[in-house]
Length: 212
Ligand code: B1M
Image (cartoon, rainbow, N blue to C red):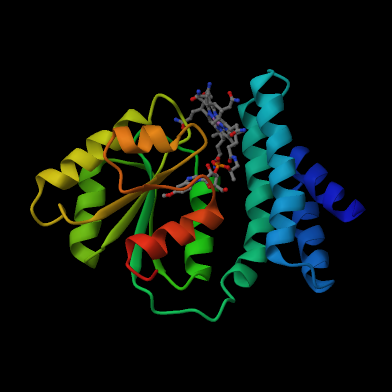
């Protein structure tokens, strides 16, 4: 559909007004949030990633693209949350210390909310102490760690070790995700689960929370 390409293009050129309007139009036409995400937003962000890597786009342009992505995500968020499921418990999520990437983490948060969870979103650049404090305060059983950089991935192990070292948080299950991660890496740092994308993050949360 040409509208999907228009949406992807609006992300690539960082036009947050157009991305919002096209997302609104697609929603009004009855297109599902998942289709908008998979056919418009993700392809757009993938092009941004490729151009960034090839030095054809620079940080300011990527940030503007991220703003356009968030503008469209705000439109589809209520649809992602409309599954009718509720009351499955609280999950805390955050991007690990040193890492400012939050688009994927925000998507995971939206999908978890849609899956019936109360999500405590800590934000980005989160040190171990902050996860521990939040887990204790909110009696969190599952915490999600996101990392997009190979340089910040190792910080996940430090957080997992810190959680295990504290009797009050030792039983908390840890799920990890982010583009550079693999199941093997997740296993090697002692995570309880790895999800490659936001949809499988909900299945994983259900498993870790004992719902399936
Ligand atoms: Co960054 N960046 N960036 N960047 N950036 C990457 C990650 C990079 C791969 C680009 C590249 O070179 N091709 C590269 C990392 C290379 C590496 O580590 N080997 C990179 C770099 C190098 C950097 C800087 C160091 C650049 C610099 O300063 N020289 C810098 C670091 C800043 C920092 O964090 N300290 C930097 C900065 C930025 C911006 C600020 C400009 C911006 C972030 C804006 C924002 O997030 N608000 C940015 C962006 C946007 C990207 C790319 C282009 C896109 C990331 C994204 O949002 N993807 C990215 C290239 C790429 O990935 N193709 C890149 C879309 C998103 C929906 O996917 O985040 O993978 P993703 O999330 C997925 C899954 O991974 C999974 O589900 C999500 C949905 O399906 N998932 C989870 C994610 N978290 C999960 C948690 C879970 C479960 C699943 O459980 C808890």
